[in-house]
Image 1 (cartoon, rainbow, N blue to C red):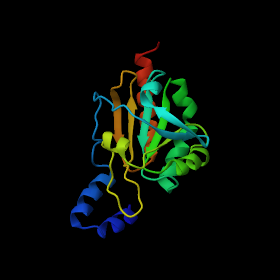
Image 2 (cartoon, rainbow, N blue to C red):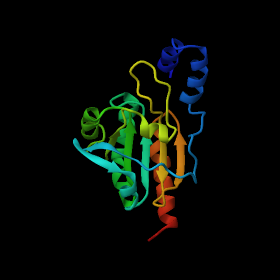
Image 3 (cartoon, rainbow, N blue to C red):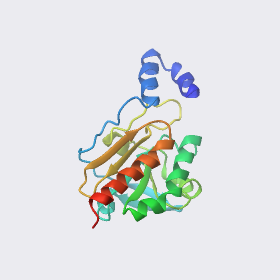
Image 4 (cartoon, one colour):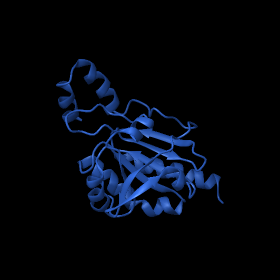
Length: 190
């Protein structure tokens, strides 16, 4: 947290205030349960292989956990990817799929999908920020840091957001999204 505050201090007073609130996790995710999830397709990678991820196609198979993260290969984002990878089987048992999205390019995502995601789930490339903006997941850009905040959404097969969680701490995202998916499964046993 101190590194972020020090970095943001160079940007200006107004940014420090907005950034500090956002980075502390005090701000709510911009999209809320019940909102329609914006449909999207993007280049993604899983196991180092590139493909086109389509939200509409993924939702035909069950809920989708869509999580945004600031930058591949940073300590918090790598730890979060490891947590999602470690729980990939738990998400699958509940009928859900997982995709992470950042503003990194597809070449970075190819490597990240193997090393950090351990070939368990895809990560999408959003270097132009279209998906990030559609989900109101922007984070203040400082230097070469990506523009995605750390926000997780669980999207139901009907395209509605079931759960939204925002916190710059990577730890709780897997626990909270998995609980939401399991609750959805309990409510929809077939």
